[in-house]
Every structure is written in structure tokens, then in C-alpha cells.
Image (tube, rainbow, N blue to C red; front, side):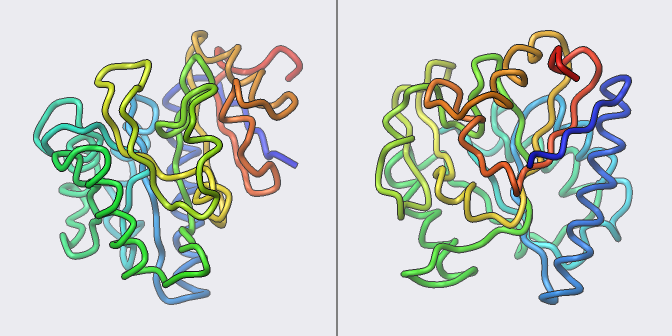
Length: 237
């Protein structure tokens, strides 16, 4: 069962999300001595990262990964890594050795292959898929998560793949790297954040029947926590 929380506004969503991330990371460190957190881009997650960045203790002992990345240089204003660095990584003083950046500048294919190798080297080896403790996700108005878009071939590709190179994103830039749906399924938890009226229909569709036309609806419901503001809340809530 998906855990859905509605907050009054975007700031309240960020505060609730930051507290949730902090608890999840603390639990992972208590259980396994280390935590593995994956980040997404976007304005809503960015507010959460700012709150976490102001409290270095919240991410102590945490390895930081990424759910997806645009195939741009890390200093490009469209880079998810740059957003994370400016809002969380630098403010919290997270050791660069614990930050696992998707190498978007390598391009979709080589970048995805490189990231798969890094995931396997750090989190485990085949045949078991590496397990991330928490993946923070946004949701697009079309229902996409990470860079898994409606009806895309990446939703049907090798179920054992860790990453995909994307060459035909409907949103610019067209070339991206994304964690696979299998990796999202394997994570101990996904935390999805949404704010604003433009996300209301997508959130409603996500909570309906699973559909390839709404990739967010394919997430594992029993491992999914959703935090939205009133504007993005589905009608039935």
C-alpha cells in the first residue's frame, strides 16, 4: 500500500521529506553501517536537499547516487549533479569519495555502462541487483519518473539492467542516463515528491492501475512513500 501524505504547501513538503530522508538514512546506518541514497533533479527535490544540506549530520555515512542525469557536463545548469552539489553536497560537506556522479558527458551508452560498473563495484555483484536504501523521485506532468518516460522502450528492456542510456527523451535534452525500473523496484524505498497543480493529474494517474503510459504507476506500491502539497493532491484525497 502506498503511503500518501498531503501537506499545505511546497515548503511543508520539503520539510516532511527532509525528515523522512533523515530517518531512512539513520535506519540504514543502524542496520548496515552505511546508507545509500539516490537523488533526482527538479525544484521540489531541490528544496528538500537545501534542508538536508543545512544539517551535515543527516547525511553522515551516506553514499550519494543519482536516479538519472542529462548528458551534459557536470557544471551545466541542466545537470542534476550540479543541483545536488549546490544544494546538498557542498553545504553538507559530503566527502567526494562518497558521491557517485552519473557521467553524462560520456553520452547515453558509455555513461550508462560506466555507472552500472560503479554500482556493481560498490554495492554488489551479479546476479543480484545492487540495492539502494532510498531513491528520491519527482514526477513529471506526463507521469514519468527518473528518465523513464511513458511508453518508452526502457520500460521493457532487460529486466536485469541497472541503467539505461536514453537517446529520445521527449523533454530536452534528448540524451540522458537513468536507473532502470528494475533498480527502482529493488530499492528498499522510493520517496516521490510532487507540488503544484500541474502535477495533480499525474499523481492521480500514478495511484490508479499500473500502466506503461504512466511510469510512476509501475513503482512498487509497498515500497513507495508519496508526499504532495494540496495543489498536487489527487481529488480522492
